[in-house]
Image (cartoon, rainbow, N blue to C red; front, side):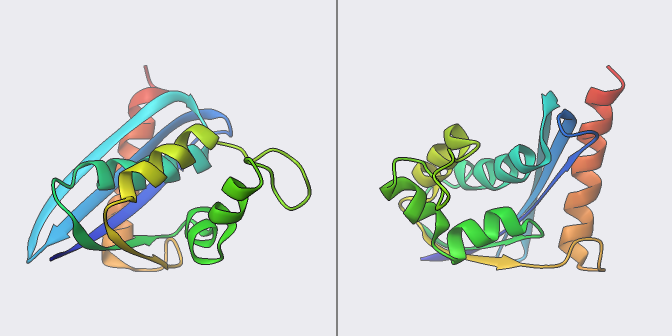
Length: 147
């Protein structure tokens, strides 16, 4: 199975406000940059969209390592929150509804056939790929902020 790295970041001005995401897919030394954004969104939605678009770009089953600076995304997977939310009909442990259910469902579908590992890194801390993804995300955010 191919071993693919997805590096992803999101950016938003205001919450909600204009936002963007940036992704780098890396396989066997080859890289593909993807980015996009929305005029009125939140940072968490852009963090999720980056990861989703990265998975949706994969054409076959892969071993995937996702590297993100979003604790929201990484912890939801690594700490089992996502699984728990599903079992509780998209309710959190405090009984409140989970936000961004549409994107969580899309992410589950996108990563379903892959072997997946999520790694959290500190943002703006010199991680080469995270810094590059941040630049892509900010560039997309700025396009929507200035339109």
